[in-house]
Length: 69
Image (cartoon, rainbow, N blue to C red; front, side, top):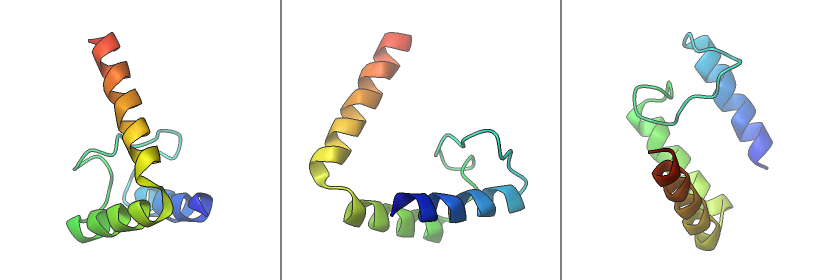
């Protein structure tokens, strides 16, 4: 289910001048999404992934950032 959405997103990113070999950071101004598209992606992500998965992902991301700092 996620792969088709990712494929669409990468096509948008490449069409906007992005590097197809580099994954965008997801930060605003580095993801080639409008604010409306970003909000829609958040809503879809919350529908696809359970809250526990999101919480675990964010915790792992926070842990990896503290190790690299």
